[in-house]
Length: 589
Image 1 (cartoon, helix red, strand yellow):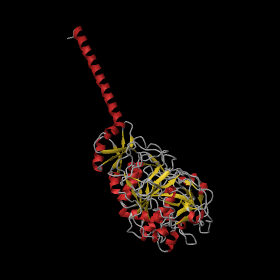
Image 2 (image 1 turned 90 degrees about the vertical axis):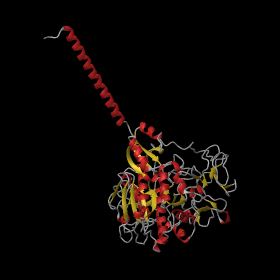
Image 3 (image 1 turned 120 degrees about the vertical axis):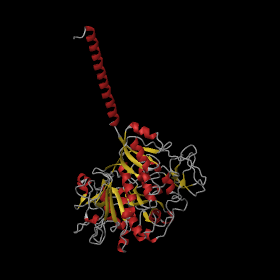
Image 4 (image 1 turned 90 degrees about the horizontal axis):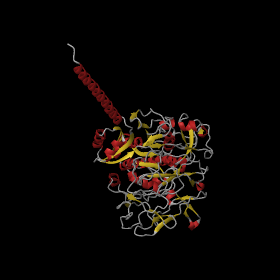
């Protein structure tokens, strides 16, 4: 029986409505899937999320949909890939302290050029490097002090396994471990390499066991153990998260490998107070674990207030560079390298603490490394590379610290710093009783390193005075130093006696490259001012300024007429996307 015309029309209408409904549902489903897919695959960026408890923070970030890439227990943080919406959500969540962009860090160095110091040539192919003698280490080597029993961790681009680096003077393997923070893998000590070259150069300065026919070692601490911690790739590129993960690993494994010294030959421009930078937080945690942290001052000198991260951490040993002026046997014409970064820090600390050889330094480097291939004209004798920088100066001081710790393993990190500072040789100008500082305290700190002097003195309690590392790491107290700037002429001043408003020292910010200084011991820094003291940050940076613990108040807080202050702290989000330099290219000196 056929349907009537009316029934047929009704059925067709119903069918059409059903088709339309199905189409609408299909479109809606596709739209919902697209929206879900967009949310799932929205553009993500890498961030460092810091909390109070690592386990709770890890669960929280995962719960919000974040992709965790690094666990950074040393600062109670994780690195994670997050969308903008997830970042906003986490910022508003209890348990999250701070969120930082996981920005890039760049390692580099400046080739030497201009000729090496003195006459380095000999038939053995082992060149004279001079800086162990200049630092006073040669005397200790002859006395059996070579860094044995102390391990230095070099956080850098990796390590070339040349025999001078792989073996100590007894031809025993010195390599304790090789950790790759980029891939988060612990490899066999003899595996891995240094595709960049910078890490090998710094490590060679600290520990090379190659010996000249005259019996002089190439490295400052040739008997020391070595741990390679790679956080940078062949082009010297790295991230904050990888650097922090590297420091985290060093702290966690310091007892396993006997790590007493950590070399950080990089310097990034500060973007916050020292305690708010996440790399600085990791460096402070390493010092809290009684590891002697040696940091490069940076290569942005000679202008004032150019000390970089992590050299602006008050606890660590920050190292500036001197040049021997191509006369290694004549100390009198050694001069501060014009590229060496200068203090004070924004928090008023005197930096650097110490100077060390850092001009046209010879160190080992694989000919296949990026630096050697890019600048073959600075490659010497098939294995040496000539390079300048505070990175190299830091390598010298890391070796010095190892020598001191071999001689007295009971010394704390603070005591090692005190010994190094108290034995330094100050650059003075003038004659007779008219001598004065050739370089300001902000340029040379305590002076030129002298490890021989450090071993014969018994100084204590002269470094990191009035600082509290536990409170600083916990975030309950932060500190500042005695430096400020005159409003009238822009000169930098140090307050004199602690109960006085008189400045104990004034510097106009100038740099002098004139030769003919006397590097001497016996200069009493405590006469007139105590620049090693720290003061409690009791009231932040506001209208009340910077309150000293003894009641003294700088007018309107710190006055930096040509620098920067951060209002209520620096907001790190979108701040770490700029490239920073671990050892920027400088002209050879």
